[in-house]
Length: 253
Image (cartoon, rainbow, N blue to C red):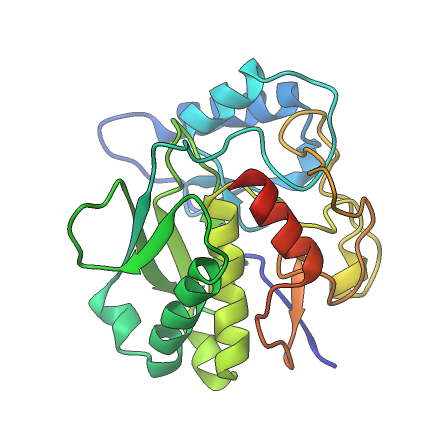
């Protein structure tokens, strides 16, 4: 089966307006290193800082990671969505909506989360009564990118590759569910060895001590196809939650 990376691959470009983005990014990188992320796991792409190749980290989120207790390992970040958030609205751009399979994948991913009866519901925007909003945007390629929660709110953007228009509805459901998972605080389930789902040589995103916390009841080792939150996906993926995915979501939310 073909393995596809969820990583954002693009050229590095540093531009800014009003503030010095280079100085801010250097502070974020410094905070992540202090929090325990290995330096080779941190990338600056299009003037934004990423860890784990597809998770954007803001300055606020990096500061929260420094304030967290140390000593745990794997699965979720230290930052989660507050229990006061009951309705998360996912707002696709017009460009996103122009891709039929991305649009259908978004509906399927929303239904994926709502099928579990979690502490929050997701709805497709525009909608009223939203406690939090996530913008669904497009990017090049056949992967995606997102970020981690901060301030009790989910990360506000998912970027989904327009190349996914050529893949099945199940793959689109998988990738969008995966990126929304980062928005509510999930790390890659095979963070310690990306070759489990991606193939190739072993790559460790970093156990970190903070920012990578084992969720009780879930396995501490990953398997190929064992989680929607694996680093890479198969072209035959259906986007269906695995038992460990459900356990993790029920435990947190």
